[in-house]
Amino acid sequence: MNFKYNDGGRSKYFKGSCGDCAIRAIAIASGLDYLDVYNMVKAEAGKSCRNGTPKKVGRKILARLGFTWVPTMTIGSGCKVHLTANEVPKNCIVSLSKHLCCIKDGVINDTYDPSRGGNRCVYGYFIKNF
Image (tube, rainbow, N blue to C red; front, side):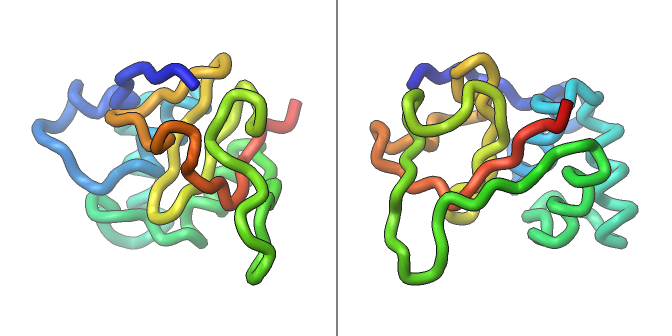
């Protein structure tokens, strides 16, 4: 799967890096401005999410924005879906171990390539309801 560096607009507002993968992924997938998503998540969480967004908060924001969760793995089932072009939708937000990233037009949009050469297990993904 191809990779494109994309910080979701974070560098317009902040320097350096932090644990804001959910905010970046939501901004990229939704087309919303990074700061708008940052403020939405911060308001929902009641604190800054620079060092990670609680799963419950991320799911609530994504549902509000019209995304649906599609699980690809259950406890004890083992890995069935990997971060490869033929195993995930062309447009979605994938949930990986301790990370979310956006797939846009079949390309990973993130600050690094989390695919591990196609071996990274996908726990599930969020797709936009149309």
